[in-house]
Amino acid sequence: MKIKKILGTVISLAIAASMFSACGAKPDSGSNGGAADNGGAPASSSGELIKVGIINNDPNESGYRTANDKDMKDTFTEANGYKASFAYSLKNDEQIAAAQKFVQDEVDYLLISAAGTAGWDSVLQDAKAAGIRVILFDRTIDADSSLYEASIMSDMAKEGQTAVDWLISQNLTEYNIVHIQGVMGGAPQIGRTGALDAQVAANDNWNFVTQQTGEWNAENAQQIVQSVIDSGKSFNVIYAENDDMAKGAVAALDKANISHGVGKDVIIMGFDCNKWALEELLKGNWNYDGQCNPFQASIIHGIIQDFENGKAPAEKIIIMEEQGFDATKITQDDINKYGI
Image (tube, rainbow, N blue to C red):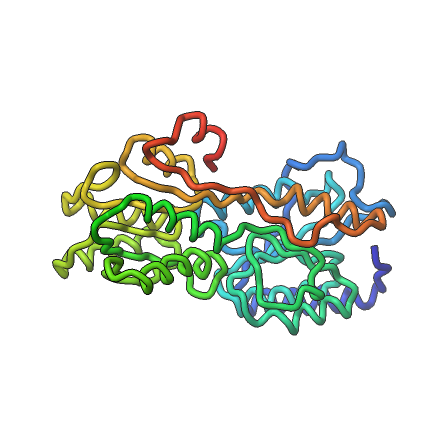
């Protein structure tokens, strides 16, 4: 723990308060019950609460993000030895501004799930100069690894490749794909798009009917698919980069009486493994769902405890274990175990 000067803290809090209202990121304080409870003992060896600034995407973005945010709030509690503050935004510039405010507030640890991969170098350099340890979670960024202490994340490129490999295995004569992307520039969009882009570019019988961002939103995805239907273009695959957008796409198909799922006219693919989405697989209404594991908080808690006890993490890069689910093979046990 760093020793804070009273005057510096007062000034920092004043600056932080003014900047939070200006940037549009939504601050919140986490004081829920602790998933990583340690019997109420302070997490810091000095007995002080550890100040943690957590920057995340909007919890309403998706079922995945809701689960991820709850995991963070259940872990970084006063009962577990933390004073946690939260900032939310789907915009990279707002997240970076929130990170700068946390640096000015002299947090001990800065935890970041970045909306976009670029533009983080300056604020991370400021954090390092201030003695603040940075831990990335959920998403990677384009910054020198010396600027952060650890990175706990999904392998988004592998998620995309696993999904595309599954699609290849369906052995369609022709692939006419409605590709609904997430927020552009974020690690999930880049990873889940990359393998599909490469496959379409390399094979004449793979085609994009459309490729648009739905920004993780079901209504946007429904509008995209409805527009394709109205155009009269033929398609047999919907590759949606999260479950909510897949759900919106299916709503457009249902409205137009177009069949979808196992043995039907249109293959439906999603990501994140919400329980309700996996149930759609079990019913045969969807075909594939790629797992994205949201539960990183306990790993981060362990890393912070190591630092507080004078130990470096055993690994700097920690990749969450994930898999893809096929509608013809999924079981209720899978849903109970892996659904979020």
